[in-house]
Length: 326
Ligand code: UT7
Image (cartoon, rainbow, N blue to C red):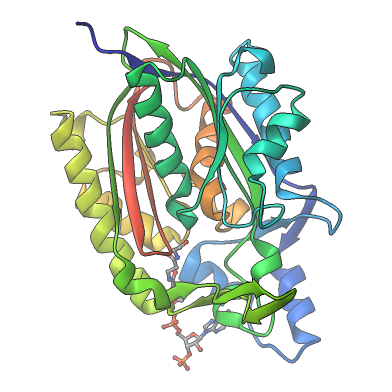
């Protein structure tokens, strides 16, 4: 029997309009007595600016705007979609899922809609799940979204984390096809590392219990990230029997330019083949990979027929990759 593949039919992205430069953030933090500088942020991370959502905006709003752009690029209507997966760690509410809210805001009903929570690896997890459902025949046209308002989790007294993250959403439409498509995916988690990147709070008895702000041991995360990104890249390439030298593009999680450079070095890829948006987006967690992919597609860099490796890493610890023919 012929294999059913998932083909990428369209991409979309959305950044909330408020662009916060390093200079803006340095000035804002100085008022709190928190010392940082544009030079430190650029040198250690590559970030120049990020976008922050307005208080009245919900993660589902960002997701819907990105989803509509992806649908338009795919020349499809929302009614054509029969599966919605939203990767997010900043859902609109505890429940129901942001995906169910997105479905309603898109004016459709009935198809399965659920969230995936794998922090910054969320979009890779979501695309792997959608690919499996399409391959099995459970879905034909999937909307896969990464959307985050990470600014609401940031402790603006912690200079080691608050300068790193931003808000945004990215989306893709996948459709069943005889032609590849997603060639292979590779997912991992290791809960041993829960504490090095977490938001250690929850709701109990109508109160917030614990500390609902992002905490990170930056150096430990950095070291682990470089190691596992190299491993998952090799694993997914081996599954598809493809050599790294055949890759047209690497679209890595946009956390830190130095992590991306280290990953590219391990794969012997020149930085010209790496899609980089961290300078303008910061780390948008589950939104970072689909946002970067959308930027590269719309810029005309990533083209039909090209071989693209998507990679994510984040809290959990989670990591994974997806290899696709555009
Ligand atoms: O999305 C999930 C994945 N997340 C990541 O991949 C993040 C991984 N980690 C990183 O990207 C880096 O570890 C950071 C960018 C978070 C930090 O860079 P680093 O080179 O590892 O710096 P560090 O944490 O070792 O800190 C070096 C120094 C420290 O000062 P001392 O102890 O050497 O005097 C920090 O206090 O830099 C200081 N520092 C800052 N200085 C100015 C930390 N944050 C800042 C800041 N501005 N914003």
